[in-house]
Amino acid sequence: MTERNENELKPTPDTAKSEEVKPAEVRAEQVRKAKQRLAGTPPPAGNSNPIVADETYGALREDNRVVMRHQIALNLETFRAAPDDFVARPAQEFPPLAVRHAPFMSVIVPNYNGARFLPTVLDALRRQTFRDFEAIVIDDAGTDESVALVERDYPEVRLLVNRRNVGFVRACNIAADAADGRIIVLLNSDTEPEPTWLEELARTVCAHPDAAVVTSKLLLFDDRTRLHAAGDMLGVDGIPRNRGVWETDRGQYDGATDVFSGCGGATAYRRDVWQALGGFDEDFWMYLEDVDFAFRARLAGWHAVFAPGARVYHHLSASGGDVLSSYYVGRNTIWTIVKNMPRRLLLENLPGIVAAQLRIALDALRNIRGAAARQRLRGQIAGILGLPRQLRKRRIIQAEKRVDAAAIRQQLTHE
Image 1 (spheres, helix red, strand yellow):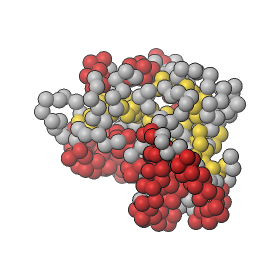
Image 2 (cartoon, one colour):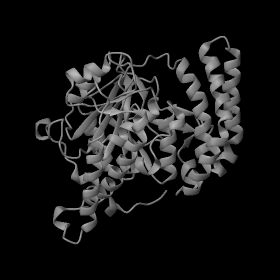
Image 3 (cartoon, one colour):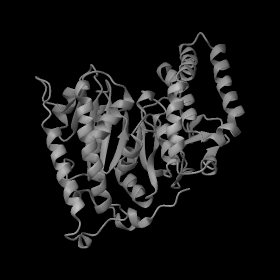
């Protein structure tokens, strides 16, 4: 596990700044100019919302890279909160939701035809005790009333609208590029966070400067005593699992602890690490992009931490997944293993990895009349067919890793 210098993670006092800190002034000017260019990007006629149009995506992303690259450097010079620097305060002492300065957090709500859920999640954000954040909704070319609802009832929310559906993963990347916060927080549209959710996430982020990922406790919306996830685990067989899934929450996971990953439906990411790793892998489209990101972050020397006090309720039935998820989970599980598993661990665990995939395939064949089983099998086939592209990524990821196989082995489970 790579040691990090704690001094790099503490805020620089204002009194320590002097005339010799010219790079910060230059960076600030570059950030200002890049933001001016972004602000000057005209939206399509007939819509006053900020639009992230597909044909202008590349140009917008490039200007956002300029903003983020220099803003990250500014952030490292001016802020890296240490545990003693975070003090929970009453809500009225925090700035209003529509903050004018660069916020500590950017809460991104990806949305696709989720108008029936949006009032619940956005009202919950209004009730947060921690106020130093911006709220961003990115609508992925849905056909319901989501855009009109946000425009009409939530003027404090930044609204991004895709002209065509680009998938959950790319939508998250687009919104993260547009965000101003030091911490990127992803929150599913079909959730309801408790009022202290962001406060608990912020406290945990500050207490764990080596954590690139800080994840919430997810419970079922309709049965708030039952867990959906207390962080994610990864087995030696390459199969990701939700920690504590379907268990009654008795506080058995209430210690802040390292986990392998966190569910992207309610998880915070350090923006500098997000940018360095390129965000989510857009080949994934949806599902397991969070596990893949956490694996890459861990290979780069970062941790993932569970924040038990950050409670979020998620609309999810105890019956589990659906037809859509079956395909992407089947495919993306294979890609996550192939891209990220260090060579030594891949060789050690190859029999178990192959056995797990064969077991899934045989189970799908036994239930071939079911749509979910057929999609899982199709996903596995697509995963194998996509291996050449993922192997090219593997060469880059493994060449740049900063931890050895032993450090990763300690994080894998035998369940």
